[in-house]
Length: 350
Ligand code: NCD
Ligand code: ZN
Image 1 (cartoon, rainbow, N blue to C red):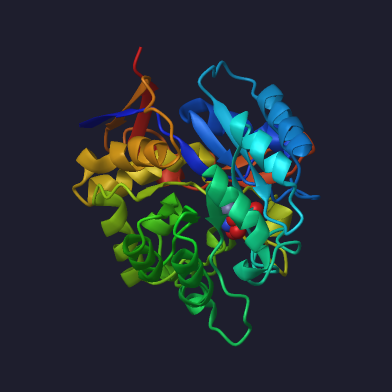
Image 2 (cartoon, rainbow, N blue to C red):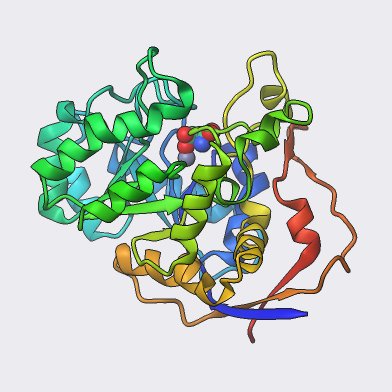
């Protein structure tokens, strides 16, 4: 039996959706996570402080478990016309934790994003002045670029020039999927990186080698085993530039297993178990707390939680769990990480 204790973690990148889907999924995030940085790609997207406040209220009123620690921060969808006062007041009131750039067309509800970061300079200048983080979905939408190279190309063409041009703007490269992301974050003092449980635990053979598994399809697409190793090295190294952002992104089975399948993996329920298993397999459980609980808190200016969780690995003592969740409207959602969940138990330290 292996036991590891960590301060209560934060999820620095999560999609909680709205309405019945929000109600069905939010408790899984509230259960073990203190802060959550909530992505704005609703329809329509969250682009004003008023929408952000109202979304935060809907999130909190959808939580049905006792979770007084849960403190979600909203993000605004980066648009050239974001109102500077919304950014200012939202930042000071701690409702808004950052603004998120979506490459138009790259992923779910990204159509109102942009193609080049250079098109957002006035807004980025306001953010830099406030100290508000820019969160970047780094993926080229150039159709001539191979899907597995799109992160590296976007970083080279867009993110590196921005980092060089605006050293005062702090940037999180979200859901890093390749060594190019790790290298870029290490090269610039004001760059940070979130890494997901699925990019740490899977490679592209898992998606395609034994039948095609739509539940592993997400953006950026899970890449090669070599890239996965680079992500595991960075996450387990203790390097304070890297932290957990689950990118938990629930979609109904009808959308995931459709002829054209939606991108997104619903991993909030067992994100900690999957992450702990990666660290366990790598012999790095002593670095788990840095990745899940302290590096991200430092990056986003929060004290580390005083609450603590204890994670216990008891082999395969737990029976396999059901991997489907049903929403109030009858939609089913597939849960990622049931195998790891069978190996680990989590409790809050009293
Ligand atoms: C996300 C979603 O479904 O909202 N999907 C995904 O594959 N990660 C959007 C995103 O973060 O790209
Ligand atoms: Zn996301």
